[in-house]
Image 1: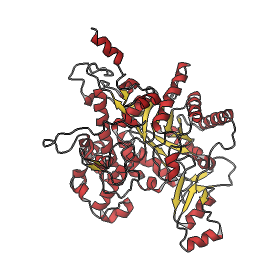
Image 2: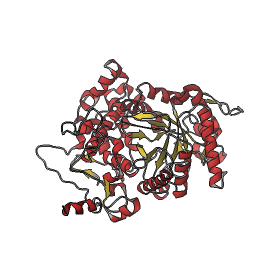
Image 3: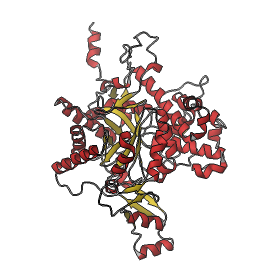
Image 4: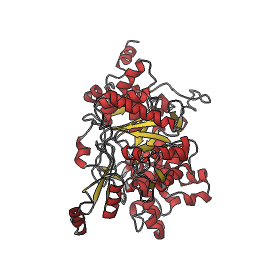
Length: 550
């Protein structure tokens, strides 16, 4: 894990057991704080520094690196030079300051998608958390200039969507209000930076989600094929507590467990011994036995999506073994895809069998190190390697830096799931406490502001460090339409932004695209061996020895 439950320097506390990312193993929407992500959602970049300045000194407590993990990588700093300054800046010390570090960039094959921070959300699909807090996530991301992913099954689980199962054409969807709500919410504040992905799984493909999106939104959205994710190696899951809803989902074509059509299950539900049902998606590619068959089907799917008018197509894959990783990189490269997201074990989810999440798949750092290796093999053959995004247990600015460096130059983005959801929870709770009549509509859980928030402030203008930055961006009149969860997300992203700028400046890189594998080193020999990143005592050792002989 990254830290213990308490971080005295920052004054942060984890409610539960911390994971490698620093988040609690179980992150609750009603939590009153205060882990680092939670508090960053309020005070922003202030949390980059130890508390109680002027009466304290602080010392690092993360000096032991045990095992192979991203936390066993360290960031290099350099004492001279400056790289990546743009045309208006020189290497003069007055220009070489961290606020001049440029984090914006782009990804894509022929059509480029711009972003302000090398960051994107994980897939926010059919889980009720994603639906409840979507406006906070989407609007906060749009204001921050980062891409958002609408995950799988959003249309299928929507009671108000209309799907004609008898239709012979693939475009069966007549109406998809929840999907429309999500698309429109993001683009209301989209200013050219960021982007909106719409993900497809087996059921989405059968239901004609791609056709619906293409017909209604053209190439405004990025369409994403899904092979898997890091938290589990079966299809997407949600849990429902209504027998009627479980039967509705079964009739929609989903696998529901236990089977709500069975009389004995219905009786058990009526008597209270069964209180919920799990809805599952199907596994993909079950009718293929060879890599060649998978490739042919994949290329056919990409060609079909292009025929619908999609100019940007991506793939999301999970923490499978090396064969599937190689397939994902090679097929995506050959197909000219715009992005490949590689999700390692250690990432989170809205629902997954717990022991499956603990035991299956390749941990993020190992998977990502091999992704770099395989991408380099293709690049050596003259291939234009697909742009990549790394996912699986990222939460803080240093982990963003490490992920980008480990996969450089192929990795353009870091994909964060749970870390970017925490601000949505916090903001909704604060807004609900300050506006009790709307608390239910806002999905707020607090009857009043807890002391952890009151120590920061008692109104939105006092609580959120970046309130007035957003007001300047959207105008005073529009602020009434900005959810507090979106303000919180923007505030936390500003902390990540500033933290990244400082780390890059220390590495003498003034543009995020300049980050390289030489900007990190391994804290132990095992990590060096597994990642191909030099051990900290070996990095630049040869040039150091030359200095001694000057």
